[in-house]
Length: 164
Image (cartoon, rainbow, N blue to C red; front, side):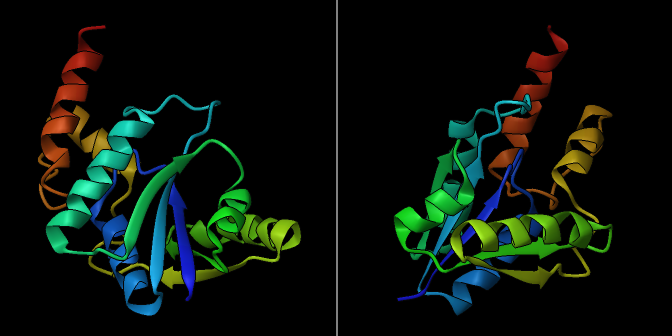
């Protein structure tokens, strides 16, 4: 059985993320979507909320071979725990390759785990979690940029952010 891991911050999960996850599910028997928890960053959503929103978005689409979890440790440790042989990362045309290549080389050195880069769908490559949050903060409509289940979560998080 071939197992892949799709790590990311997913703060929030976007249509571009889902595209990479769903495309990965066509190639591997099992795909683990892993919310990487970084103590040095302050995400908009808790790791539990991010895991839940990814699960809900994927459940709507019927991807039973996709597992969703979070980790605060090394992605390579998670890969070894679940028996994954590959990490899958989506690449946009905005310099993702340079940032991801360094991580891919470190992951190979640490655990002999290869990284597969999937090019973003051209229709979605402009979408990032940062852009989604920025658009939403300025009152723009993010429908279609994120799964439907994320739209109200984003609105609630922005209300809470505004009340601080």
